[in-house]
Image (cartoon, rainbow, N blue to C red):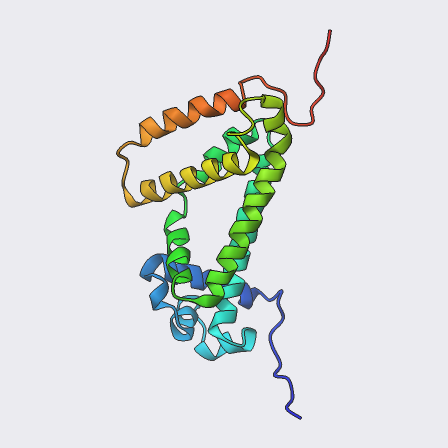
Length: 205
């Protein structure tokens, strides 16, 4: 009976360092440059150490990607818990910070079945999280509920914001001001300035 190979602990600093190195290589050289040697070199380690903490390169990539998606989910949850969640979510979604890394992950998902499956699973998960959290706010807005559905609004804010963020990171800006003006108008209809935060008491009388 084959013995199970000993693996490094999941809470190891070295393990995190390797994941940081994966994203550094992706930013600097693109996902196609990823290998055990390039990642280890970026981390200042010998390449054999990669396989002490991860059974395969796919395991390393998946762990790194999951760490990033959990961070995205945490930021989204924080935005949804703000006083004006739609406005805060739009600001977060359209922020071009680290958009180049997001583009590399999307490109990788086209060629890596493991990352593609994770991308689909996370995409469905976060859309439903946002839609569910927006449900009561949109019910209160009373604006054509057959059009402004929770999923429709969630997708519009996250996807449109993401596209603007990606384009800004690439240096494209044509039409952004006009799109932002349209979105700002729509958000004001759904979330007027001075509207009480979701769950906050509403004064009567």
